[in-house]
Image 1 (cartoon, rainbow, N blue to C red):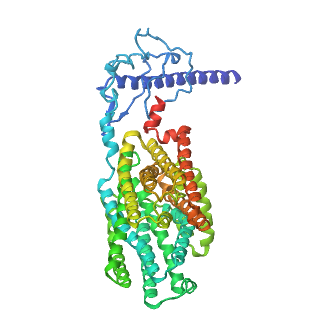
Image 2 (cartoon, rainbow, N blue to C red):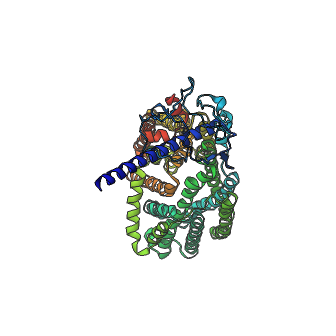
Image 3 (tube, rainbow, N blue to C red):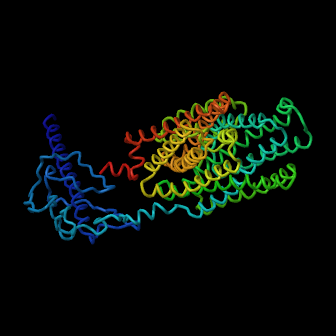
Length: 611
């Protein structure tokens, strides 16, 4: 019995070896068949799908097919989606009747019978033997690449976005001029306006991270509608409180005004209104415009950012001028009622424009929300956890913000907010008026700064097209820092009460707005490019929050150094902040990380370095 068992085991082992040998022949036959099929487009076993890709239907090779040594196989033929089991093949095992190899054959392929496949060898390096589909890949010419980079992904959606941004921003800027003017008429002191402004900045610093996080987990269009509803409602509440004060309050002391219930309601409504307005701005300027213009189309995105900045400057000028014109002809209460009517009419128009943006852009703003997103939104909207959620959102937002590859570019934007002295604003106006400068010169200076800001929006898109966004950003910061240094030198060297030093001083500050607004456009695009869409609102809200903190710090410094004689100290701080922003940004460009190079691989700066 033992001899029979041994004989049976020997027979089974021999059969297993033969089975493995046939399996090896079949595997190599499949590889040879695939190679021959690629060399002969007319082979009957190859089928093409409508997408232009090859799919193979291979039959097992017959036992009589010759074979080859696997150690002679050169792995230069790549075939997708073909699984071959060669685990049982011995590299040194030679099969029977191995024919001599052709001298010029890159891959030694054994001929198949004529009724199975073409018997010609497959030289991979011979372009004439390859199918036309594999000869070359379509590559755009340089002109076509520039055209593509300048063409928005959704042009109709962008135009609808411009209309919505223009109308909503016009109403917002009108109200931003209306409420301080009305409070100034109501009370001579600057304290009521300062209190409202302080709590507005504080609400942005605290609330921007949590609102940004909520926007990243909530559908875009419903969130856009809700924010517009909140903004319009709070504007109406604020206007109602101011109308009540103008009608019923007269010659009250400053303490009596700021402790009245109507003023407390005005402060609360103003803080919420500003937070909603900034959230809408972050959504449009950091998220929507990127989706509509295209993240991989830098020129189109730069042009879109420039248009949004032009519209913002236009609305700021027109809104203030329109309400000022109304105040010159009508009673303040009547002007506020007209503003209320405009606010009420703006809401349905903005909602329709938001829907139109999504429709004409093929629903590019639609985004799926998972159960996790819904749970996060429900938790964030829990009123009982408002303090806990706010602190958690600030902590989470800061952790995400500091991990971004484009952090230096965003931090440079924050540093520019420390420049409150050498810029058009309340402090500069107070300095010039205290020095006895003519109001006409002060007005001309403000107008010139606005014109420079508008010109910068055209220059920035041209710079991006010529030198790329990274060099354009560095150029804007260096230009601003250089001109502000000239202004500071003129201020310390001589009296700006004299005509020539005054003109140089004001001209340097006005021209520096070219660099400031250029970087404002370019820096926004750099952050748009580097921040993923899923975190765009969170990072944008965190940047706005930190910028508000910077403004609060400089506001506190201005309160401490409230005498005009201390203006030089504030000017030094302003120049130092701008110079620090330029140095930090240039260091970031000079020492790029691998992730930074990958992120801006198409920018001319890193393309030249790669060459």
